[in-house]
Length: 387
Image (tube, rainbow, N blue to C red; front, side):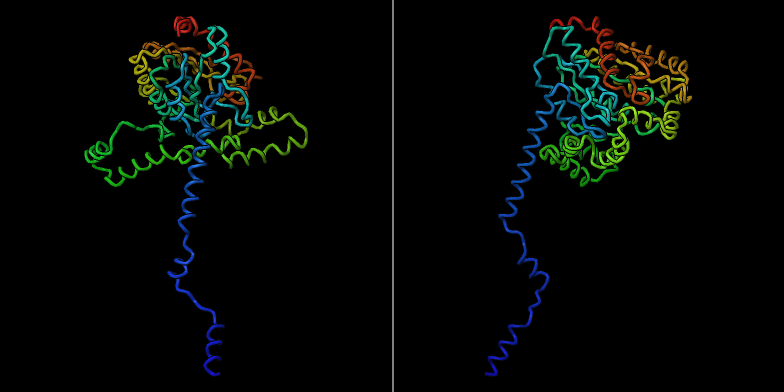
């Protein structure tokens, strides 16, 4: 009886497991691992299919504040059967941030081109990146496939001043040499003497995984499709519009007025402060190098200076219009020496067409698209008739 009592007491005492034993007992099964992999693969395939359909839309644009889908979009253009014009620039080519569904300038240009050319398959590819510096435009152009023979470049004067003295590239992931082998990268790193082979290997591994794991490199595109922006920016925007929505105010007019805050005006005064233009300006020099390369490739190129809301520019003493025109006249001559067409459109438009200093609402974009097509169609009319 005593032995049985001892055994009973022994069983009632809780058993303490060693950490290793607990981990082993609670380890995921191979079935859970397989299910996780299948879910990841399934999500990736769905995202690829969704993105492919998105890139086929007439008014496709790259996500706000990210270069997601830029590489994939360039690859997709390579197999397009029809004439293509690529518009390369900054956020002035993207939908308005507070109106994600607003038509873009490239979309209106595409509609106008199809009408005047009689070619329903004319595609205007939108490669606009918010805040894109000249180095980013350089990298975007290098992504373009050989069947793109017409390029329109947005020249925003605000990126020729103090911004040009900052890093010229803010989307560093666009600068990649996909033809470079791992051995070639190792040899280059060894010659430069400041990168370890393991770092080179990790970079190549990251690129390989990014190329094969779609959502790793393009996850921000998915957020853009769901929220119209990155989630934190979307949340801030919703908070801002609650008040005027409750009061029944016109949202577009409210946001336009709020845009011209003292902080915004001060920033624009700084970025518009451009000294006398010259080849010592890094952004200018890089633009001319880019245009020279396009000329060597036989690409017809148009560069247009972005319009500004001069009523508010002069009202808040942001910049001197005569000085801006003088600088652009010099730059325009340099651009035309590289075989490109230069259009100075800084004073185009009405004040009511602008959301802020350089972003236009849809009515302004439509009018500008008609002007662009009218200005350049004589130069490339032959190709329009014989795509």
